[in-house]
Structure formats: structure tokens, C-alpha cells
Image (cartoon, rainbow, N blue to C red):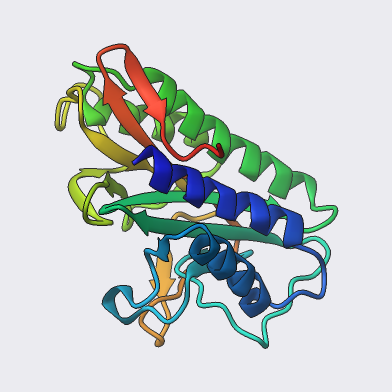
Length: 238
């Protein structure tokens, strides 16, 4: 799983280097596809439940599952969430980062910081004996205390030979509740945080999820393994 995770992380690094104003989200998807396949892996998302691309690329008020398009061009001031999975040797990696396109607004910077910091807080807490609700409650409190919304409809998940496995890993909840973490468990923690209302809507394409109020959304994700000594992040570049 470290191998799948490293390729996933490398694809996000390739995306980070490629992103620039004027680039289409389809061009960005091609960069990611080429990186994953050139490293001997398959894009986990391509064809998953009929999904038509190698990455989910979600701009500004799109929370998740944005379908890459030749017509959608990135512009200065945008934020763009890039969700990537790579499958190799029977296992998946899954990770997301939200990138800034040039100079972005102060609220966008604050939203990205809060989302990523809450992810790293949850990872720092993850160890045997901790319950998933402990992580969920920490993510919720961290972001809501900063005035941001926490999406309820979509959650993190187990990762392994399947891209999405049990248990679910919500970004909201009650400490002391939920599945207890044990060594050997691999989960994806992925806070999806909004500038305004946490309410979301799905578009008619069956994939794209946007904020109801049109406010910005950020998304960060790592795949982690629970070991006797705590969490190990699998989605780090080699």
C-alpha cells in the first residue's frame, strides 16, 4: 500500500507543478493520468461506477467529484481540489489536495489552512484504541470554531484491495463513539470543508457536488495505516 500511496502522492505533486491559469481541468487530468500509468499503476477512479476520468477536479464551489472538462479553464484566484487514486499490486492509494491558482483571497487561504490542519490533527490523534468518533469530533470542532462548514453527506472510508471499504470516517461526530482503531486498519481521512453553509447539492451529471450557497469548498485527504505506534501516512511521495 505504500507503493500505491507513493504513486498517488506523486501524481498530486505532478498536478501541483502543472497547475497554471488558462489550463483546462481536462489537461490537468491528462497530466495525472500520464503520471499514474507511467509508474505502472492504474488510475483508481477511471471507470469506477462509470466515472469518465482519472482524477476528480473540483474548482471553487465544487466540493467533490468535479468531472474534468476541456471547457473549464483555471483562472487566477481559483482554488482547485484534486482527488487522485492509484491501483497497483492489488491495492489502492487515495489522496486529495486543494491548490491555489496564483494569488487567492484571504478567506480562501484561511479555508485551505483550516481544512489541511484539521486533517493533520486527526492523523496525529489516530492510534490503536482511539475511536473514529474522536477523529470526527476533532475535525468538526477545529473547522466550526473557525467559522467554516463541515459537509455531512460525504465521508472518509477504509482503503485496501477496494477503493472504498468499511469503516466510514465522518468529519463530524461525537468523541468516544464509533469503530475503535486497531493495528493493520487502513483508512482515508478526508475533511470536506466549506466557506459558508455545509449544505451541498448534486448536479444532473450524477457526479458533481457543489455548495448550495455558492461558497468555496476545500478538500484534503491522506490514506493512513494504523500501527502499534500510531498512524503512518501512506500517501507521501517517495
